[in-house]
Length: 148
Picture (tube, rainbow, N blue to C red):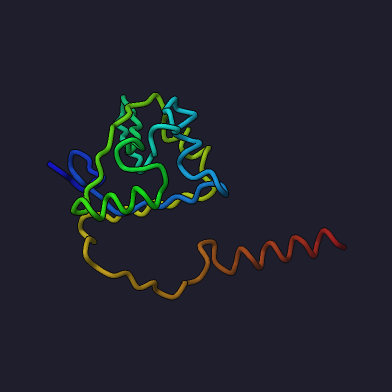
């Protein structure tokens, strides 16, 4: 049965979204290839990283080009013409989150505590700096003393 990939943990204490920018022109293909996936046959479309206190797994989901087409456009057309479903093969790899981060240009992860789920956030104006102005004044005085 088709399913939408969604991150999950045992208790879902916090959940959210993630985004990746790959180095120009490489996308996910170079990373998948470095993990031993035949990217000439399989077009990688998703990554699943799961980590516990004792284990870590990195799975690549890829579409067989022989089934859904050679290019990104072919695969998009295939998915649209098949009710929004892509046939994927799961590749369980020896990769890690650290390996993934080495291959990215930018990475963003937002996880919201379950008590705040569904709420919008409005940032409050900044209060006095953490160390307060008296520390700034003391640093300024020390700099003046060093000059003299």
